[in-house]
Length: 410
Image (cartoon, rainbow, N blue to C red; front, side):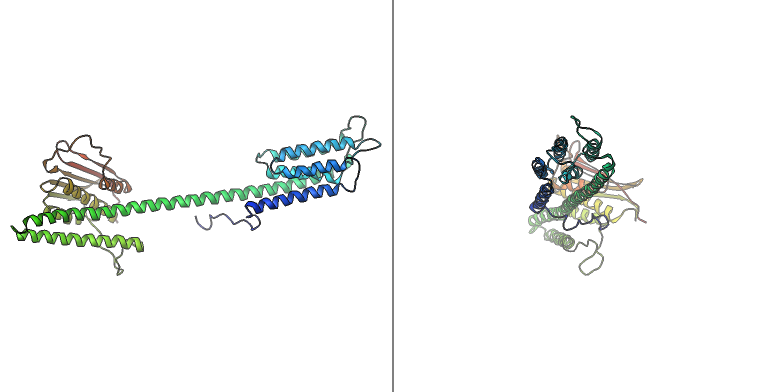
């Protein structure tokens, strides 16, 4: 996530969390309750203290049940208005401790999760104030408020409502930014995990291609050299040279993989020069080694020079290399292999067919299953946007076919 997309950091006091925020909220509730009680002191009429005390108690639950608190406070104000009439009033109305109504309304606006409740709460307080000014209570009592004072009460109510709604908007914005930051962090972690998984899969493919092919050739050559060491020293010497050359190439590839892991630069050697890229010409090299190991290999490459990107040439080479490795491991010496690569209408076609040295390829084999070799080839082709098919042939042997879309090099 870029710096421009990163949500702004909230102020330090907004970042209070856990028990500190809870403690701060409790202190605010205590402060409101004390304020309501203290504003009832100047009146001293019979029920002013009990009414103010009940209103003060509701402040302690205004966050959890804001709507219920507003309803309770309005009900207490109604009782207060009824008790304030007559020649010997039992309560004062209006009174300063009626600020509990504004506090309750503010709690609904600020804390309610229902988007309709802020408007309903404001409308309820305005209607209750208007009713107190124009409705004559039963029993011939006078209205609680004078009509000419109504604009002042409504103005104060609207001011408090707008302030509470502004705080609500700010709270919702802060919550949305926090949620956005949380989701962005989770998304970044998921991207990192996917990238790490893809990198591990790529390294596994490279290690398998290098180690499996090289070891298969070296083992067969070593077995052959041991068998003819005394009878045909020249053949044994040739096999040993092939083992040495294959081992050196494997070591070079291993060094390249380790260098990529350490430095992350896949295009340069340790001295800073560009590393030699694997091209389709390398197919003939691995084919010749397979011939020395006892395979009969026919190679046909009909791809114009410069038509493939380095990545596409690497993919084609690794597929052919893995196919020859599988033939050496499973069919052994004496098998015949046909390798064909050609480019048709922007698609590279790769076909590798072997006869399995005459061994019947049993039935019921799932072409989508297999070991690391088949999975690695399938992953390489799918990463290149192509299709892959592998399975036993009718009779004996195995076939591998791949279609890879090409991007012509300019």
